[in-house]
Length: 134
Image 1 (cartoon, rainbow, N blue to C red):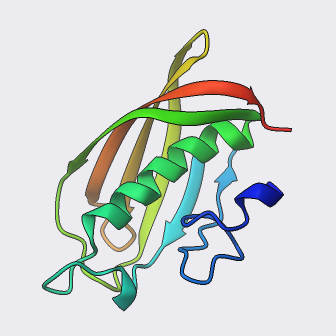
Image 2: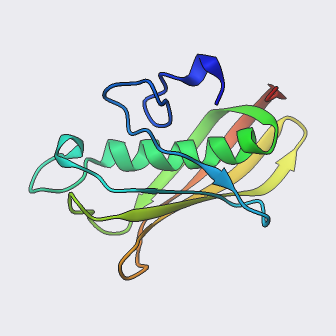
């Protein structure tokens, strides 16, 4: 973790109201994490707020780059919500690099319910590479 990211809303370990997600990069270069939304992450009808879903997907894509040693910032992101996510439902997230052209990286993120593997939401993102992640 970079010291300047310690208070990141999604992955910062010292943010008292953050999600505190921990990301890993596996041998296949897929960034992964798990998350269970709690009562503070709700919108209405005991469903997880769409902004929380978006934030987690954006960060799994950004951390795919960071954990590979590349610092990149979101330039554009499009999300498609496939089904509602009830509070308390564990999910797993995956972020993959699908291509890169110069300083522009193209990524995809997916969120699945842990129980049945069904797709909750998916996103595509364009990221601007700004530096190595050192």
